[in-house]
Length: 448
Image (cartoon, rainbow, N blue to C red):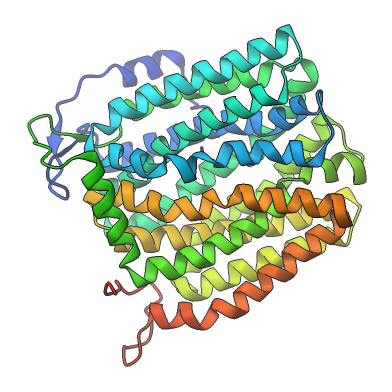
């Protein structure tokens, strides 16, 4: 999670993080408390925490595959890193979401982020001392990904509690921009350079970013009132939340659409390092710069998401995003020039960003606050969980038909998905006989 380091002095940071505040009850959700920070201050801290941890993630998004290349050049084994990182969404995302809804988010996130810091620090030590086997990188990627299912649920569930109703889309855009600026812009650029200097440096930086994130989120996330009783079991919470998700027509349709888009994206991104090194002939530092330049489109789109979302409405925004990303894949399939490849990746990133903000804002307007961690993770479970299959499909196709044909297949499949789901998405957004869809947001759907 998933960028930037806080631009304030060390003394100011220590003063802010150690300031004692009295908790206040959050009336929008019984049994929760906030840190007592004003809304704008809490949102800035939330965005800064996401930016910090995303910067660390960006460092290792380049470093993990480059470290794996020391042991193997097999496309399937390299794409297996994506499988390992995303597999936790199939295995542990539901209990992770239930834990976030059930316990004090600040404590849970603190423990998880510190554990993730220890894991990536251990990888850094291993990279310094010796060449790590691919299996060790798989294990580290899996554990860090498991932590992401917890932290992501906590951060996303806090957004509507820290924002006014009309500010949720804007906050989602800011969080998305911070995540992209770190994970895809500053992080990869610095990660490639750092790896070229010393393979352990990106992992040490990632560990530090998790510590910063844990400290910031400790005083930002709404927590649970200790006096509030928990009447149900964890298993009962999971069952109830999963049933709520499956009974909601809008969430079901959105899940199908977004899962299909994520599958096609994974076909491309899972083997992108091979494309960059084999076809574009880029080294480690240049590969990081390629990802960073491409991420400019993502950051710009995230910051403009509220305006686009308000002008077009969520239905059109999601379909436009799908078509735009498909265009990026097709353009990528047609070139072996680094500049054009960067333009194609920027187009794909911008489109994906707009779609992410639109679908996340729709979920915030639909899912009750007290169930958001679990239900949102239930939504993301098929979306993120099937990314490994997309990565494996991409790796398999590359071995059979080559990189360029694989990118073309991903683009054509995504265009087919856009065409096939346009009408179902429109119908569930605006049921028959209902007034036209408002530009500001999807209509809260009836279960069924």
